[in-house]
Amino acid sequence: MSGKACVIGAGPNGLAAAIVLAQAGMRVDVLEAESMPGGAARTLELTLPGFLHDFGSAVYPLGAGSPFFASLPLINHGLEWIHSPAALAHPLDDGTAVMLERDLGEAKDSLGIDGPAWDKLMRPFVERWSEFAPEILRPVSFIPRHPWLMARFGMLALQPARVVARRFRSQRTQVLFAGLAAHSFLSLDEPLSAAFAILMAVPAHTVGWPIPRGGAQSLTNALCRFLSTFESKLSTSSPVQNLSALATYDLLLCDLTPRQLLKVGGQRLSDSYKRRLGRYRYGAGVFKVDYALSAAIPWKATSCLRAATVHLGGSFEEIATSEQEVRTGQHPDRPFVLLVQPSLFDTSRAPAGKHTAWAYCHVPNGSKLNMLEKLENQIERFAPGFRDCILARRVFSPADLESMDANLVGGDIGGGVMDVRQILFRPTWRHYGTSARDIYICSASTPPGGGVHGMCGYHAAKMALSRLDR
Image 1: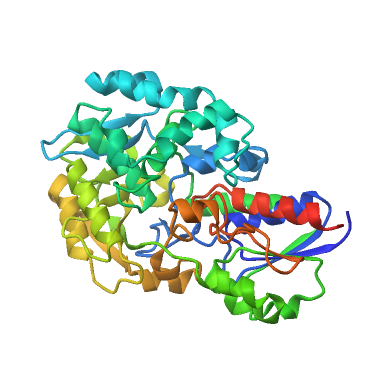
Image 2: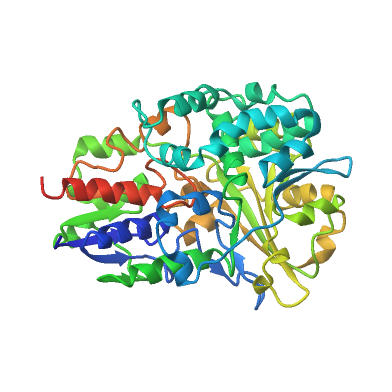
């Protein structure tokens, strides 16, 4: 195939789209507004020299489990996955922690009385991950390729996390499930919140929750290096003001959210399509802090040192209250905190003997409230003396995040609310297509949604290519 395509935005989805187009024989230009590619998958010295921090994403269950990424020789281009011994730790007020073990059999044993229920819930999807992953990482289909498997998932997915959590008798297992469900940014009483818990747990037992050696930038760099083996060009510090300036291209794929697409679309998009985009809803934001530390975090439950990812919330009800408050525009006093401690397993992230960590909590979209004290109180609650380890910190409000990546609208790291309506019609009924035959959207605001997996870009590019000669 001959022809030229332009991809706007060099996040994981934009790079995935560019690779698919290049593999089809198109000449591809990628235009990135920031000074380095990656979007939310970048690694920077945000605190002190020698301390490498992931600006956005840091742990990659769906990156390692992505059917498209798995098809690429990224290992040959510098990507190396590191697995912590356990996928996740969730410390409790009694000084212990409930662990999400990588092996499903070990998870069954570690969860005690709830082990059989956990195994029964997860095993059908774990054992058929190679069939399950492509189904869930694409637009919702009413005629799935594996109907019985997806029917089983659908009956669970449509339920609130609170309902599914009743399958477990121990509060320890319930709080583990709550923390996984909270990745949805939904109330735990809302439909689909259970789906996110399952979609976080199943990869833990199949591909794990790995981190890239050297940070998120290593994944971005591997994608860029593979793209460079084709007829392509990546230009950074190249913001696009209007799509009309790109009229010489046969295809335009936009790794942009609806708000950004509306800004640059101009007369290329119909008024009716722009009205539909204007009704798109963004979700809660995050308040994030990066830390340079003098020592590893002093967890009361030392088993937390086995996991790169730690969830902080004392009980199911505490997490449910926190997420409900954020969903209704309030700021929780005890926010649910997600923390990553990569330098325990990747010594390239910090000087010898030192460590890095990042933590965030959910806040209303566009929040201006400083949540630092509340966030650190939650860490101190489970790791007394944490503040004494801090050498430097970098605080990011939702506005700060958006200033470094325009796709993080109001601090929304998921590309928009992931409720039932916006799962089915994301960002409109057209999904990747727009009102212009040569313009497509390929960001996390399209199916399957948030997460670093590249599948939004993959599916958008496949659709664009299929329609190119019509």
